[in-house]
Image (cartoon, rainbow, N blue to C red; front, side, top):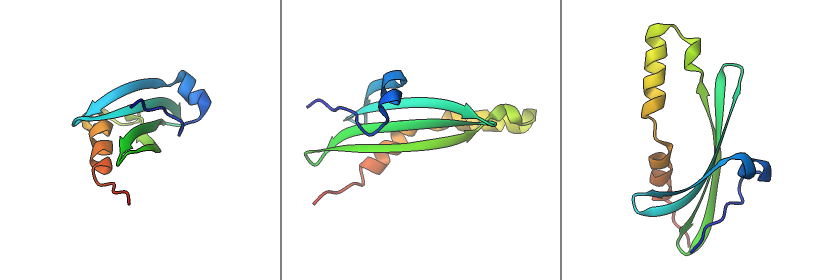
Length: 101
């Protein structure tokens, strides 16, 4: 079954990073767009996937501090924390809890 993304603005779909992702055996279509503003970055994600025979769309935005705003010690901690965060596995954990009637 093909999964098409519709939960994110058309302009983002066109300029976003659209990728098929396989996470723990589940297939997702993921669109990702990142923008920066005032010392933070905003990452907008849209995932589409099939669950219980239905196509589901999940969209959200994450804000992250710009690590460059910190002194050396906290900057390194910030960079390490951001590098270790895996949005795909987080989304997959959420999806695994979804139930449809």
